Length: 129
Image (cartoon, rainbow, N blue to C red; front, side, top):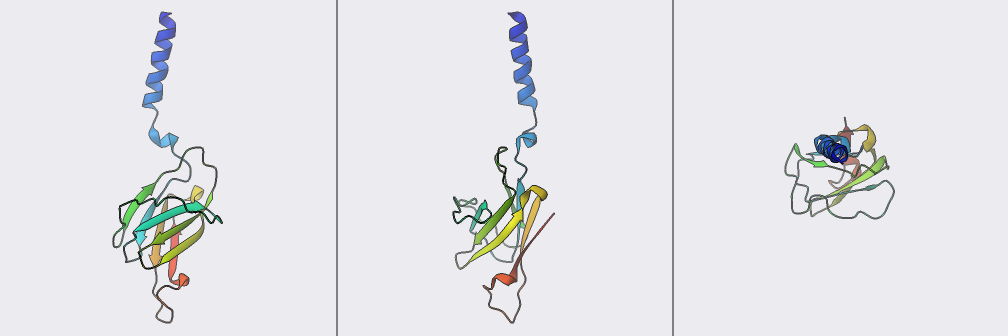
């Protein structure tokens, strides 16, 4: 009986000391706002789906340039390719087919082209590392 109790205590201790990062999903990433405008809503959905789910930011806002937020997935998640949708109360902008299994940071940028409307999707880009 003492061996069983000792074994259970050792197992629980081992589980508690296991780093939380090892329990993270392979798609976990940081979003960096480099658009120059505030992002009020941020959604992530498996690529090609029409359903966006809940706003990841909740009441938070990614302000200005270089503000960031960490996004964590369940370890059991197997999807690699994701779409990201952002909103600043004036427009929705979509970043399609981002392979999050190969990236730890996704930087969202706005590159103004004076010959295009501000809301033109080709003004918005993402880069990853």
